[in-house]
Image (tube, rainbow over all chains, first blue to last red; front, side):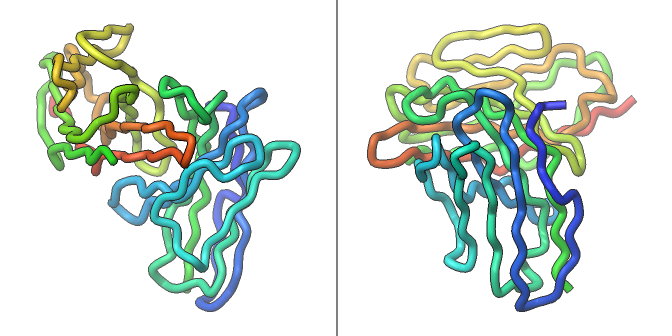
Length: 116
Length: 112
């Protein structure tokens, strides 16, 4: 158990809909990262937040957005869903993430999103 | 921005040593290289991290040559339970915004 929690574990929805994925980082961690992993594909980095502020942006679509709240939990919002958005979405957290290259990311169990 | 490249897959047998190389051109001076292990439908798990030369922990070794254009993860005496996908990660921390680059992953199959 990494200490990172993600809800829900599974989500099934229809095309065109909007969903919100939630992540609670490990106690004390200030950074949250979001990743997308399509079936049998590698990890695609989406976005990183550090202490409430966006710190890095990867291949995140405009239909997707994220935020980190004062209590440090984070939400990933996916809108106008398409079939191709079906994937595992992982959240990771780390202690720092602002200026420390040695930060280790701890991954949650993921949310499996199925778009029908 | 560092670009990381890994072999797609490799097979091995129980008890053998497995070496996975990740190529990372344009790696920044302060970048560390981190390796993760992922089992199906689970989140990746930290294995080892290094900057230069050799680092060893209880599960793996990581060798990064002086030019730092590549790194090699070494798994000694693998067992069936080491069958997984292994990812290398380069992180560049900048005031203007961090850059994270995962390799495409190497699927390791350990056979009996």
